[in-house]
Image 1 (cartoon, rainbow over the protein chains, first blue to last red):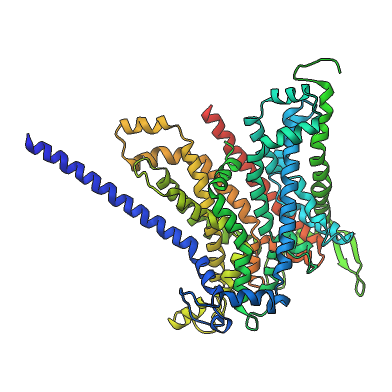
Image 2 (tube, rainbow over the protein chains, first blue to last red; image 1 turned 135 degrees about the vertical axis):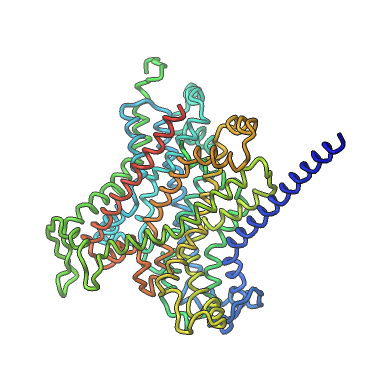
Length: 295
Length: 310
């Protein structure tokens, strides 16, 4: 009788040990992957604190040095001719913010139009918007670039226009409307004497705030990081965005420039997005699945 | 304004048209017209008239396409080389991306492990996805370039010669780009696969438990087969994205003019910069056709999933 109990206990203990070992292994693996993710950015941070003569062909190190302030100051003064960080930030911010606003407002408007009204062809329109989501942006970029160069529309607000028609954001918005906006609410606001535009701006938009916030972040980050179209269309130094400037910087000879400033420029270019992300990561990660898995 | 308060209220229909008008007008002018122009371009020859800024345009038929698929002076078929580069680099990155993504998704969703702190790990794993690809590539260039710390380290250890350059080396440059793509995308894959696993009906797992199936069996026989449609979706969307690879490869190896990391979009970009709209258009059309075929495959798998579920 007692033997049976000890066997049982032994088995139980083994199972517990096994579970603990498995858990520890998982944590080790996850920590390894986390280090892998952060490693290069940690090196970036380290190198923003090192002086140029230490960086030119310098040794590999994980230790911070003490030239962060110096590099920061140099970037905005001496380094200005190679990389005008202030102008880059301004251009990037203006473009990313305006395109995010345009994308969100007009996608919400279009989604509301299709959701709230019954009119001929609306099913076809929705199917059409879904279908064009699959077309690679390069197909229009050649023609777009050609039109822009032909009619002198480079370095112009022109670059923002396509963000009004964003199929994937539309898709997200209409799914959100279907899940959250009761049609009775539209009806009752009509009875209260609200016209259609007022209803959308004052009643529907506030309801859509969570969806708009998610898409604002994604489209802001998307255009903040984008290199392809801006590199084709923006050549004026006042209007170049950060990625375009980084791409230009990369083509200069790095033997003759202040590498501390190069690392600082890279660091500052990714910093705004990282800060926003650290505050809103849960929110952002939720948005990833909501937008992509439709099954 | 007769009180036809049914669903179909004709007096409001016009507002529907007004609200969707901006989307369609903008799409037509700024996306559709350029798309048609791109396709049109691909059948025309754009040659610069010597000594002027004018270009002469003449109908070329399929000449641009024929040119793309014929050998150049180096004996290469340019478009196939770039397509090959793109696919190879994508493949090197997507294999660890899918495997890490799957493994981590399984660990995170395991009801047996019940790990704590998954929120922290998720945050860290997804972060590289939001980082500016151009900046990341520039960082890797600074670290691995001939004046970078990795170069110094590898020379000191005697692993490479002083003259060796990671960036212009065929294998290393490809691996570095793939590594960046992997780091940037495996977190995204993890999140999507997790959502897929969490979407599987809990009762399936319960009954397997009652039947006494081991956890490895559950994963192998239940989770993976049910996850397949989503995994295929992730794989193919990754391929569509991979075919459009540009930022990382351009910033890392654009200056070195590394011929084995020139992607298909870099090819379009190079043609565009010299005003060769004919060739740029033809490459874009080829890319469009490949993407279209891949999208059709996605559409088919999603539909099949819908059938099996209903």
